[in-house]
Image (cartoon, rainbow, N blue to C red; front, side, top):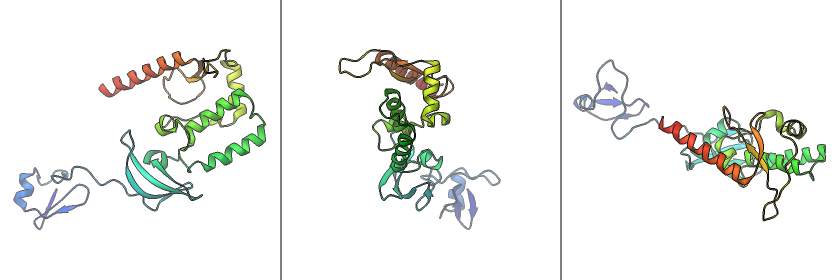
Length: 224
């Protein structure tokens, strides 16, 4: 804190009307870095109100996500409002409320004509989870920063890799009639994204085991 005319200036720039003695009693020593005023322990959160990122304009800050990251209410160019994590917004990971995804899918469907193939549906589901804030499961994928490798944004590139490396989906159905095997991110070493060298076909039991391992690794990292 800087002592100036009976005031102490916080490291964030705020000033408090404290006497020189009060400043000294709170740990201020001339020539040392500024310290925070008691009861004001951290700088203000950055205000993004009115700023535009892609198709989204920030309306207001509405709190924090389950993971503790700042959460902003944004208005999309289409008129829809949607909550977006600060990191996803400023990094360009989330560019709209989801309408850009709908447009993108429509263009790809027209171009490839693969809409009725199981592998296309798998790929489209991954894209939804990673990039469409309206999609079921987005909070656990795109909301956690998980992405699809850029080269696989083209379905044909994704299809070629899958068939050449891990092969077609293994046969089998669940008791509910769904495909037993789906794309799983594995081994998740070096990246958590859907990327070359990091996918496999896996059933529910294998995927649950992988999720438990990944969760354990994360907890160990936090404890280290």
